[in-house]
Length: 50
Image (cartoon, rainbow, N blue to C red; front, side, top):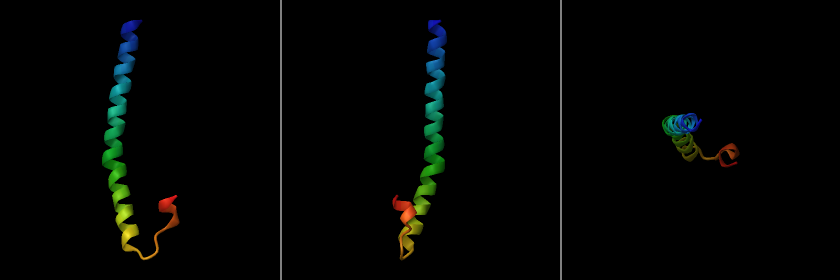
Protein backbone atom coordinates (compact mmCIF):
# COMPACT_ATOMS: atom_id res chain seq x y z
CA UNK A 1 0.00 0.00 0.00
CA UNK A 2 2.73 2.43 0.98
CA UNK A 3 4.79 1.49 -2.07
CA UNK A 4 1.80 2.10 -4.31
CA UNK A 5 1.31 5.53 -2.75
CA UNK A 6 4.99 6.37 -3.26
CA UNK A 7 4.79 5.25 -6.90
CA UNK A 8 1.74 7.44 -7.46
CA UNK A 9 3.47 10.44 -5.92
CA UNK A 10 6.54 9.76 -8.06
CA UNK A 11 4.40 9.61 -11.20
CA UNK A 12 2.63 12.81 -10.24
CA UNK A 13 5.99 14.49 -9.70
CA UNK A 14 7.16 13.39 -13.15
CA UNK A 15 3.88 14.53 -14.66
CA UNK A 16 4.29 17.93 -13.01
CA UNK A 17 7.84 18.28 -14.36
CA UNK A 18 6.71 17.29 -17.86
CA UNK A 19 3.83 19.75 -17.68
CA UNK A 20 6.24 22.49 -16.58
CA UNK A 21 8.52 21.70 -19.52
CA UNK A 22 5.60 21.74 -21.96
CA UNK A 23 4.48 25.05 -20.47
CA UNK A 24 7.98 26.51 -20.75
CA UNK A 25 8.57 25.42 -24.33
CA UNK A 26 5.07 25.92 -25.71
CA UNK A 27 3.37 28.70 -23.79
CA UNK A 28 6.27 31.04 -23.02
CA UNK A 29 7.37 31.49 -26.65
CA UNK A 30 3.73 32.08 -27.59
CA UNK A 31 3.42 34.71 -24.85
CA UNK A 32 6.69 36.30 -25.92
CA UNK A 33 5.49 36.39 -29.53
CA UNK A 34 2.17 37.90 -28.46
CA UNK A 35 3.98 40.46 -26.30
CA UNK A 36 6.25 41.56 -29.14
CA UNK A 37 3.28 41.80 -31.49
CA UNK A 38 1.44 43.97 -28.95
CA UNK A 39 4.52 46.17 -28.57
CA UNK A 40 4.84 46.58 -32.33
CA UNK A 41 1.20 47.54 -32.85
CA UNK A 42 0.19 51.09 -31.98
CA UNK A 43 -3.01 50.09 -30.19
CA UNK A 44 -2.49 47.26 -27.67
CA UNK A 45 -5.29 44.72 -27.63
CA UNK A 46 -7.38 44.74 -24.43
CA UNK A 47 -7.50 40.93 -24.56
CA UNK A 48 -3.79 40.74 -23.81
CA UNK A 49 -4.04 42.76 -20.61
CA UNK A 50 -7.14 41.06 -19.19
